[in-house]
Image (cartoon, rainbow, N blue to C red; front, top):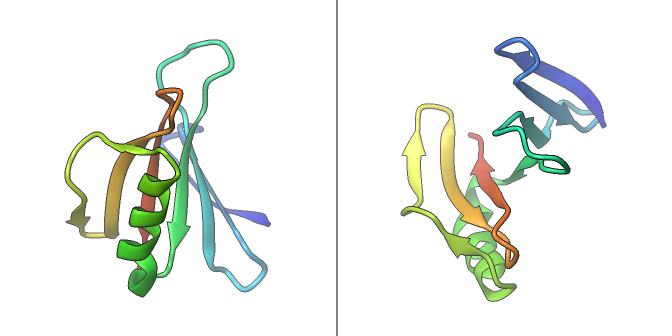
Length: 90
């Protein structure tokens, strides 16, 4: 993967595959030793199934999934309480 976007200084970095498809977003969050906030990306038609799969693996929703100008997003936590997002971009 290669870095394709950097926003808000170094607060937000997007890594994409060689064809330019967004694959991983890394967002600087609250400063806690060893913490990182990941944005996982999927295709728009996979969003609902991927969200269900992540919940089946133990993820918990922090709020209802929503549609933003850039695409769909779900704010989740892993089983240890670490926050992450599932995103799909049109």
